[in-house]
Length: 129
Image (cartoon, rainbow, N blue to C red; front, side, top):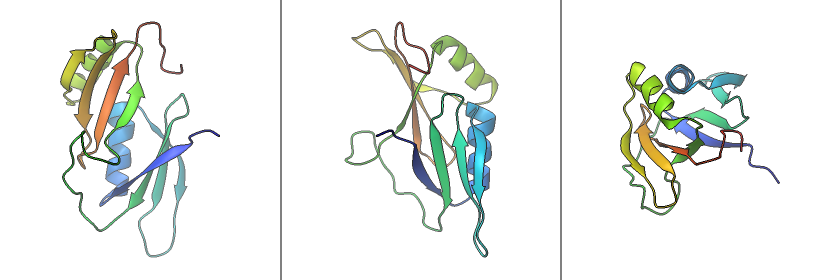
């Protein structure tokens, strides 16, 4: 079994898909269109992780990382400092940046709909590992 994708419901799927593409380097790999509703976007990274962005009329409930259920999207990066500079150049600020006791470097940002994205760099790890 392989994890293929996870879904995010969005009030504006096209705008959220554009943000993931422009800010994080995802690309649209599939668009599903049905009469009378906004399209569904499947986005992917070069390493194959996919996000499905679906239309929703409901708002987002406020969440914390410690609550039960979905808390964040985790993305592995090779060079954390380069990522931080790249995101800053795109007006995306990382919060909670720290080195962990197991020598990982992690930080977080939120997308425009307040979904939390975690970036983690592990010694000897590459994004596809």
